[in-house]
Length: 214
Ligand SMILES: [Zn+2]
Image (cartoon, rainbow, N blue to C red; front, side, top):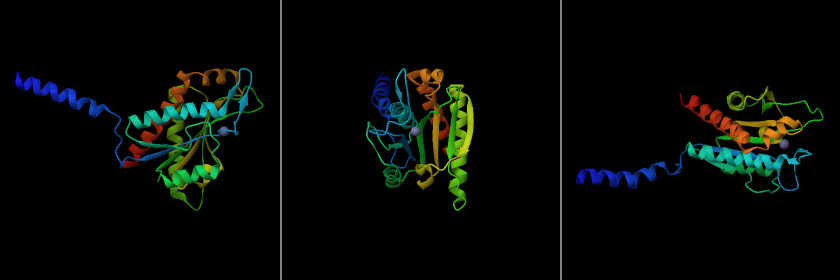
């Protein structure tokens, strides 16, 4: 009986500790760069009104939550509706000794039928190691996001965006869909769909680290 009580006590006291979100100090650091913010609204569409900066932040918070649950440390370049310069975003990533950099954006174009998800990486001839790792990360993140969302894949592309060019760790920029497309926009406004995008990004990041360790 004492044994059972002791076990019960152990279970009650230890179990919550183990299941709590304790992220170890040596866990990889993922930089989640949240597109736009403050006076920089990003892409807009109306009606109904939808700002890129807002959905970027909503997605990023979900990404952070799920990465933390898997034991990763996460640093967001903004967690409020604030303007953060591109240089500052890269600086934050460096100061936090980020292992990976994932920038979250949504797309917009004049053609209302354009749709789907694309992921960019910066192809730097002078730094093949970082470029190759960035491409691998882009591949795995795109395939996982498509698996979760069933959205149209626009592929992995080379891009010369400031943050992925200047970051010093493997870096990608995710364009999670078109807010200029009425159907995609109405999906993007739902928590359910954003959750799918966020989980896809997290699946990809997790797989990237696991493949690397092998
Ligand atoms: Zn953007």
